[in-house]
Amino acid sequence: MFQGIKIPTKENIINAFGRIRPYINETPVLTSQTINKITGSELFFKCENFQKGGAFKYRGATNAVLKLDKQLAANGVCTHSSGNHAQALALAARINGLSAYIVMPENAPQVKVNAVKEYGAQITFCKPTLQAREETLAEIKQKTGAAVIHPYNNPDVIEGQATCLFEMNQQINFHPDIVICPVGGGGLLSGTLLTAKYFLTDSKVIAAEPEMANDAWKSLKANRFIPSDNPQTIADGLKTSLGTLTWPLIQQNVTDIFTTSEQSIIETMYLVWERMKIIIEPSSAVALAVVINNRPFFTGKRVAVIFSGGNVDLKHLPWN
Picture (cartoon, rainbow, N blue to C red):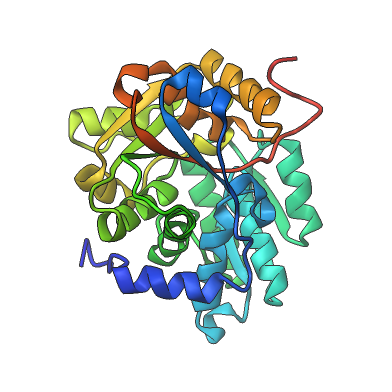
């Protein structure tokens, strides 16, 4: 028990995987000899860019929707999100016959806005601050009676995100030395930390964060929560602050948090597109950028890298 909230257990994660498995894609684990040579590491990429909705977020959203009490779900679901959780919840709601109300910052990528609309959700735009997002969401909940599915500060969402590494562990026949994933609100990282704790006890977990949105790094180094305040980074999926549930989980369990520059994020994204022939978004590139920029730490190690998503506006690529 943790601040009045039950932390997902080993059994919860196993059950979550069984619950959502009929609804999700089993995403591939890919390798690249070229990138291995560049980093001096043996890398295994968990490609959630091939997940429904284009990102890992569909795991958590689906688990939360499936666990929702029918009476609570009667008026639909609502959330705030810069894009990937918005898409995920809109799709999960549609598949389960529920209405979805999404609060999105006014600077959200158009490709993500379009996808949310296509999935049938009703969008309300707000200023690009956490305060504005939360205040607008409270208004939507009051108006509609919809159940709030928080994008990361929700045990059911964290359970779902934990299935990403859990599934990967079933796909590769060894424990990686290091698992690295990006951190924004901390849902994926929290789930990854719990899966590693329960199933990969010898694996270290490293978080990756943009230098321009480094609230998690600051918080860990200061040993206290430091919120994000309208960060300006190309990694739009990593702009949100940690939550009251995710921050303590991360503080107590993460091995370390590394940051990387905007230019490095762009160069790494380009590298993956060019060498691996797959589409990843800037938030996904952050994890690999950290590995490339911290070779001594990762050299000679077997590293599981989580590519969190692939939702990119093809009309506005960062290297153009």
